[in-house]
Image (cartoon, rainbow, N blue to C red; front, top):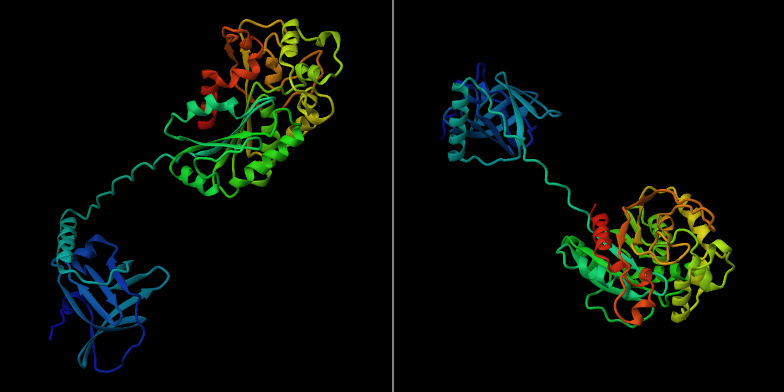
Length: 438
């Protein structure tokens, strides 16, 4: 039978031959808050059910017995004898007061380990001999930088464009480890994608640190604003339920489609951030489109001879896109008003504008990319032109100046710069990447 070494720990004890107590303390390890008490009064109380282990200071050995507790007293039971010690417990603070020392419940550890306790006893004694100067804990390591929020990126072609309009853009971005080309979704061509095109696949790639690239292809390149909106809604439904923020990148008319659908998407996905990036987008009525549609033009609006010649050679298929882009009807002004009246803070609009160095003889595009003025690409009002008022909250990017790229052979001459080469420009791709990652 173990002899109970409690006399050295207690200034007062009472022998009791009867009176059995039924209330217990929470299981766990109770250690003195004060360094002196840890080294001189008691190293720890360990309570496990109705067993109490008292770990001795300086040596780390222990005495174990049954116990009972009532407020003000803890009683150690050994056979038919008991030893009662003054003790109180505050349930709110989990502090046990024993022999003048405050013992704090520090953990739910309820097993005694002699080797470990002896090591702790030596450490406590060394601190006591050193004047109980607590060594401050080392500063916590700096938190890791917040993870970059990878995004689902939709690329939308413009007037008479198709999925190939952004081929070079996607191909260039996909060379980076943090981008993944998920192919294209088309209303025009039958297409069997290499990878599943759904929310689960997007979430899988996002969790791998990838920005996911998806090209959008309309059933035709000359759809009205309304038709583009309806087709985008159908094509994007297959990605419903993904967890990524979203970027819409649109070239020319695709920029206007991105703005319209982007607002709709942001309103219906309040937990997501939305970026819209427009490239050479005509925020103002476009005279080239108006002329192809057959709308009336004034003397300051007459196209230059070069574009007149080009358009005649192309024999461009006229569609309702030309009507809406040309400002004939209210489609463009309605979109402008919707954007300027949009109150959400979850969407950001960026405008990339491009200008050619050797200017074409085009009255309305002398400082633009051959089809769209620089002010129109930036959402600005253009004096003496049919106008939609200024577009608000457009983050205008530095204008990209590039030579008019024309290869040998007549076939390249008849393709206006704006429609063919703009999304392929390295500087355009660099600006797109910078906006995505900022």
